[in-house]
Length: 72
Image 1 (cartoon, rainbow, N blue to C red):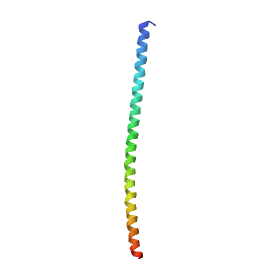
Image 2: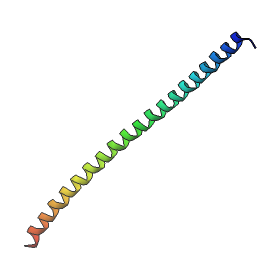
Image 3: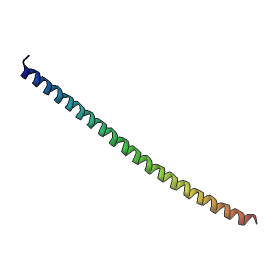
Image 4: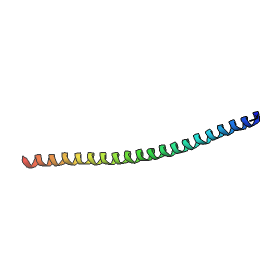
């Protein structure tokens, strides 16, 4: 193998490594995007459930107040 052949081989190796790393970065980026979407969806769901709980607690308090008046 000549020096030039060796140099070309090294360049090819480095380019292969770059391509592999770029592919991995794309895969990881897709995975991160997926989990960000999941987190956003779960956050929306948690907010909706929290709102339901809050509304139900208000209704419970209203009903308790009504009961107090009826019991008197």
